[in-house]
Image (cartoon, rainbow, N blue to C red; front, side, top):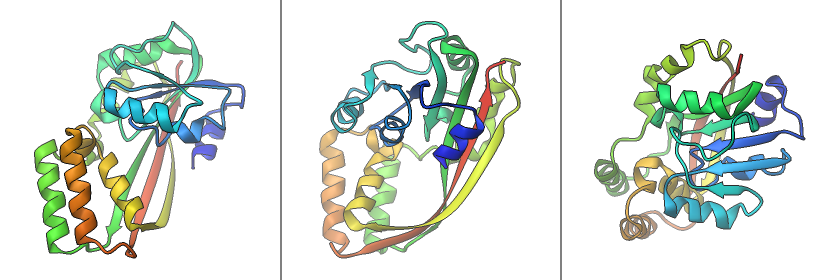
Length: 224
């Protein structure tokens, strides 16, 4: 999916790219072996610390969508995975335009869950409570399409999209790690996240394989 989106956007191996709202680096680690220079910008100190540890090949910087710590026209592409809806504002889009070279690409990726395993009443209640503490995940904002509005200012070409559906089979620990990376849980205090993970390990057997189906959509466009 990433290779196809990058190819359609005309990105070469020599490209310098930005991962905006990089979180703990799930996309960053895929970008590093593909491009000559990868800068990862993340405002949350704890998440950025994880990123720095797991993706040492990227340049991790503190910043946000409305204040990107890069020079004008300094990158060939801006990527955002599971994050753009949090800073889909006129100010952030203006910053993206500022740091992109003319003709540079903007690639926005999201995962849409199509099916989940039933994890049991207690585990589901625990997850629901964690979401209530941290705020409902941003899928509703994605599905509303409101994130598109700031991109309609004329600074970008029309959005194109690439779609892929796939089945997932994850170990219990992989599934828990993914739950901890969901934005509404990832920003919670470390002690709350650790307690949440510990309780999930008690409720879900260690040999459990968690099945699911996921649709990934990559939207891409170019700066005019």
